[in-house]
Amino acid sequence: MSGNHEMNPAARRAPLQKRLYLAGTAVLLAGLIAAALIYASAAPPDRAAAMYGIVDPRYQIELQRIGGNAAVLMAQLHQWFDGLWHGTALAYTVAVLAIALAGGCFLVGYFFADDEAPH
Image 1 (cartoon, rainbow, N blue to C red):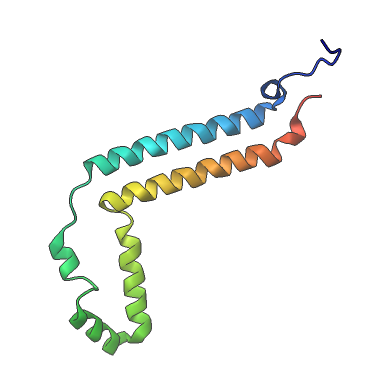
Image 2 (image 1 turned 180 degrees about the vertical axis):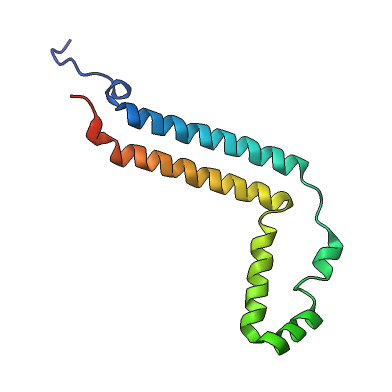
């Protein structure tokens, strides 16, 4: 037995750090559960919407004639971003956002809450 009475690392954490870790864990679990539910209940993609969207060469030619290459690129970017919020892509988006938000909570808890640790 050593005479050194060190506390375990969990007991030395500051209350703010514990709350940030708990919030990160809760966000991660809730986000992954929500993503799994969204993925399981997602409807198959609509073929008609994909057929007549920005992919149609006639639409791209007309859009380029009216607005130039920038209009075509912006339409493609808009369609990609809009596609993130439907069907299985929404499940992946929710999962990535949950992981990023939980990672942010863990990062803030790890680096910035050490200043309040009791001595």
